[in-house]
Length: 142
Image 1 (cartoon, rainbow, N blue to C red):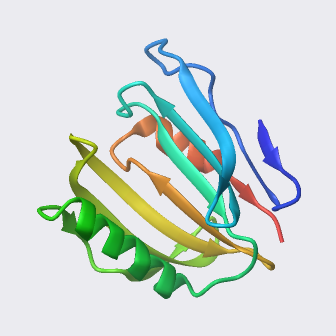
Image 2 (cartoon, helix red, strand yellow):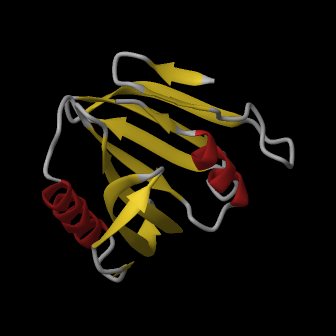
């Protein structure tokens, strides 16, 4: 279990994939917030990133900034429309990306969701069943 009590969330990330490959977990700071990044070596079995901002931010503006970054990094990539949705029972904003990043084809789902005091950005590879299980364990507190 990985917990960030100061930012009010917890998640279960396995130490290995179902195929037995190790899952690397990095913790740090980015964009003024706290970040956990879990991935298998090829990122196909496990890819989950959780970033909690230091406070509440405009979800649509954050999604627009992320989309701009992806368009610049992957000019031929495909982006779905940014849409209102729900995530873990909360109102959220999300979009999907498929394209080349770091020289490899990647599929990512970006979700921006608020707790009572801060916005979280959750990024996953939506094609991975392991990622779905990890997201099922994510608890976002108030």
